[in-house]
Amino acid sequence: MKGLLTNYYETAAIILFGIGFATLMLHSNLIKKIIGMNIMDTAIFLFFIAKGYIFESQAPIIRGELKTVYAYVNPVPSALMLTGIVVAVTTTAFALALTIKLNEKYHTVDLDKIMEMEGDKNDE
Amino acid sequence: MTSNLPLINIMFLMITAFAFPLIKKIKYIYFFSYIIHILLVISTLATLMFVVNHGAYALNIGYPDTFMGIQLYISHVEALLGVVFSIIFLMVVIFASSTIDKEISENRIGLFYLLVNILYTSLIGVIYSNDLFNAYVFIEVSTLSACGLIIIKDKGETILAAIKYLIMSTVGSGLVLMSIAYLYSITGHLNILLSHNVIVATYQDYPNSVLIILSLFTLGLGVKSALFPLHGWLPDAHSSAPTPSSAILSSLVIKVYMVLLIKIIFRLFGLNIVKDIVIMDIILLLGSAGMIFGSVMAIKQKELKRMVAYSSVAQIGYVAFGIGLGSIAGLTIAVYHIIGHALTKSSIFLISGLMISQNKSKYIEDLKGIGHEMPITLILFTLASFSMVGIPIFPGFISKWYLSLACLELNRISLILIILASSLLNLLYYFPIVINGFFGKENLKGRIRKSKKVNPYSLFPIVTLIILMLLTGLFSGRIIDFIALSFA
Image 1 (cartoon, rainbow over the protein chains, first blue to last red):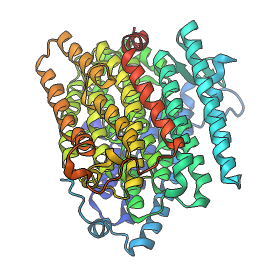
Image 2: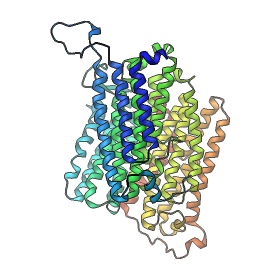
Image 3: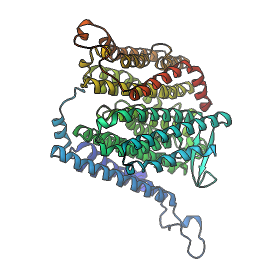
């Protein structure tokens, strides 16, 4: 319990991840699924960035004299997550485009209803 | 110069990809794609020769030292897989030039080749990369371009399949990124070699972390490579895509993630560390379950392409089985199986595409007597299915044989029964097609001998792939020795 409280960034990230995952898996509405996907991605960004953050430290940009190592945060996680955000945006845009296409073809964004229309392929 | 070829390959494919939509005449698109892929075969072969002569090497990009820059690492496995991938891509591109205009509309052909190039870039990127975050970005690119190759047909079912694939893949890549974050927090590196050094020094301080990282990687990469029971998206995606796309997706895309998992297990952690972790047994269990259930599902299918797609689930099971054994012999044979199956499955998918388009029906029922009309095609199918079932000399048999030997080495004899059962199940769904295709008076009624002509441009790549498959089986000893050099 104490560990969860001291690492509250990570705890929050894992809870957010759970919320996003549940939304992604349990809802059949595609828009809600995409929202869940985004919450999940954001949770990972929070988790990753928290790894590089030191309380009350600055970005590693030197103004004036050079301070001790502890005065600066680790910039690598933030830089990586910039790429991560780009990837997430691309995926979201692609998923939304697919949703529009599906809506054009089936006139609904509900995945369960679309599956019903497509019919059973004798899978299970 | 030669040592820089892997990077040049990646850049060359990326840059040339975007020229395709600009070309107006379809003939020139085909010609351009031939040139690109032939050059790629030559350059991957040169990389292979370089590795044979000089041994494995790391290629730093940007910064001369590994700490700051991105690194590619090319050992024997990577070089060999690069050659296999480039040959399969060349053959699929040749096949596509004769059939793709029947499957997708004309203004999308340029886009199709663009996506093929991007997908190829991302696949060899994942294979070569020695930097986990870089590998993650390539994984994302491969997912998006693979989705693109599925939806390019622009039909309801393909879009549905693509969105299922995309959703599952997002979960998978989320888990992969999470495990990279976890790993970064305990090692402070993204480079596999540097992380390995830290892990070896400190893993006893973090007993749970190794378990968590490895399980997240396994789950994430397992979803993407359709490891049983995470395979739900695969049959729809691979059966509804255009034929050349399904050949690439089924033979190469799902394998790449397994290669990354092998790299993580062998290079990042090392076999000594993962040996006692329960995850290895879970990979073994999922692999064995996939081998059985994938085949059982395949038997129940009525559509040819869906059957072949389920067979891929079973074959990924073999790869996971080899990894899960947790020995060097197991990893070696997993890589061999990746190569053998890539050649076999791509040819099977191309053949099924030909049979479906000529017979104008996607159901297995309607293929009865097809051997009378398309004898050469069905003979090639028979050869490929020999490999899937495991007739001696064919690569499928070799990997089963060596997997059994690897089990014996570890004194886990009961596992051989699973391999045997899976082989028998493979027999049950591939041979009925062959037997019904060639024999039975009832089946041949109304069929005219050699009535269905096959374009030589579509037949040539299949024949080449089958010949290469036979060679992979014949020279299996040498190939396995060569792969084992990476795991020394």
